[in-house]
Amino acid sequence: MNDMRLTERATQMHDTKIAARGVDVFYGDTHAIKSVDVEIADKTVTAFIGPSGCGKSTFLRCINRMNDTIPIARVEGEILIDGEDIHDPRVDPVQLRAKVGMVFQKPNPFPKSIYDNVAYGPRIHGLSRNKADLDVIVEDALRKAALWDEVKDRLAAPGTGLSGGQQQRLCIARAVATGPEILLMDEPCSALDPIATDQVENLIHELRRNFSVVIVTHSMSQASRVSQRTAYFHLGELVEFGDTGDIFTNPRDQRTENYITGRIG
Image (cartoon, rainbow, N blue to C red; front, side, top):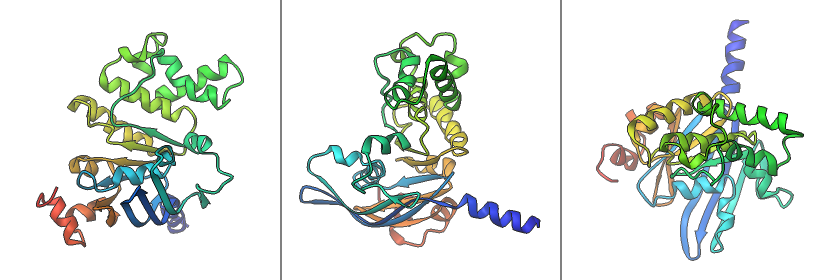
């Protein structure tokens, strides 16, 4: 019986949340992403690594259709979330982005209060019936972002007045306030000092209990610390994808090994 439970638990841990099949991205005549196939598991941190300009952020933006906002961008292929094609004409990109939250490289709080930064998404998506509901959502999001205890007595203060690390955690709270299932993070620590980076990395460990987290990082040490699965991109191709420990200690592709060992970068 215990073996059956362990098998069921292992299956649940590796349920596919995001599946990409034959994804190509073009910026005008530039072929930025070339026939990417990948399956990303639920409740897992997946890191995208690779040299600058290799396509990792471009592919990340495919997952919530952020490339739709770039006039010269064209995305081909199929991306499924929970088995549903995100490019189906019936899919509303605004609703998709509520389900797939995003945190950017530089903290970008709105010029509003801490409370209103977090409440913004729930308000526009109609997720609360009244102020009491909204209060609960805001507190829950700030707790998930490990920020509540630091700001609970100054929710009316401007979000821009927080430290850099606190601002990034506020942006994470804003992203989780709409109840997403997936969190995309595009180099979320690159503008932070080491102490703030450590706080955000600890937070990422906590977030994977509730979300599928996909993080683009230029830091291989960060990828090795925070992720369970790692994808290596090179010149628009997904070269290798697997368990993080295997990617860093026993890569199958010579290009991956060259990057990991610093021969290319």
